[in-house]
Image (cartoon, rainbow, N blue to C red):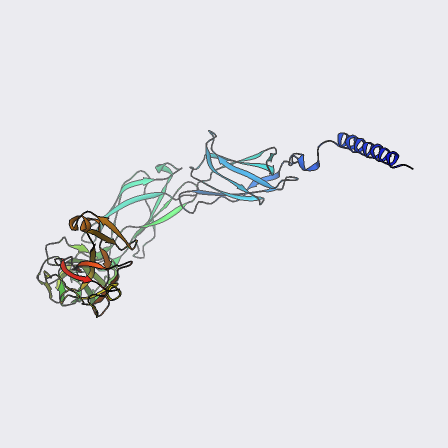
Amino acid sequence: MSTSVLRAQSRRVALSAALILTAVAAFSGPSAEAKPPARPGKVSKLAVGAVTKPATAYLLPASWNAGTGATSYRVKATDQTGSVLDSDTVTDTSWQATVVSTAGRTVRITVTPYNNNRRGQSSSVDKVMPDLTAPTGSFGLAQVGRNVTVTQTALSDDASPASNITRVVDWKDGTPAETWPSGGTQIGHTYPLTGLWHPTVTLTDAVGNSVVLPLGAAVTGDTAPPTGAFTAGPGSAWASYSTVALTQEAISDGDFSAAADIKRTVDWGDGSAAATWATGTAAEHVYTAAGSYTPKVELTDEAGNSATYDASVVTVTLDSVAPTVTLKAPRYARSVRSSRTLKGSATDAETGVAGVRVKAVEKRGTRWYGYRPATGTWVKAASKKAAWRQARAAAVTPTATGTWSSPLRHLAKGQLLVKSNGRDLVGNTSTWVLTSRKLTRS
């Protein structure tokens, strides 16, 4: 068979194969990868579990059975107007909504299944917010001799009207608890001859939420003030710097009040307002002016008996002297290498050195340069004055022994001028000290 005949037969076979492939592609349609995802099935058995309210918001735990083919769920909680209170996208078949609402309002939980980006049919369930909040109220206790009167100044609840809130007073003296008559704002009681009691009132709303509120202290037969002992230190302090601690060494009430129930009020003796010493066995203060001060502590027990006790004396001194800062001469005064790290010392005999600042300029030939430590670069300037304006100060913290160092990167030959100053811990700042050296050798 000739070569030309073979080529013709090959062309006929190739053409037939191409026609077959085209027909198959037309018959089968788009590839499986191009098909949109299947629509997921609707979720079932959507329900809300036990609703709680640990703080100001309700927690609604919702759960459901998975929708067929669903890869995720878009969930939301809405109020009766359709406003969204909470929302999320989850892959699990449960979600806890956090909503701010009030008792008696209806919240709707809606779950919409998705298969990738293909949306399914939504399901919803409504839940009425239960009353889980106890009533609130405020009360004052007044005592004349053995007789006390409790006065109600506020009473409310998020669901129950005030008329449906019961009030039960426990006088804590062994007598039966007493139900407060409806509508009244005062209730009274007579205590025995001597003793200390802490009465309470229990408030309960219409569905049983309740809270116990303390009414204060009732005391009879207590005429002795509490006693205490206090120290202040350090005995020598710096104005506007040292923290003076007032320490309670002892405190007691010989008859009724517990130590924790004795009120403490501190007068630091410098004209500042007296402060309530609420917790702990130490109180702190910073004096702002020099002088001799004696902190005083007033103790008051629950019967109102009080006495004042002096703490130890504190002598406060004003630090008005700035630190002394020096720049150490390098081993080789004319060497660039020896001057690449500036070294010095900073001392302060009073409160101590807080920091040192260092600025540098250099004249190289006829041009001036100001040094910027943050970038380690020298900025060209038209004059010495302009170079100082271009320069930036390096902030250096001295070591415990008072030494400090500051690098000068990319230093070159020329006339180097350095000025430094220091600041102490109360803000006294020394004047700039200027030094100059001519660098002629590498």
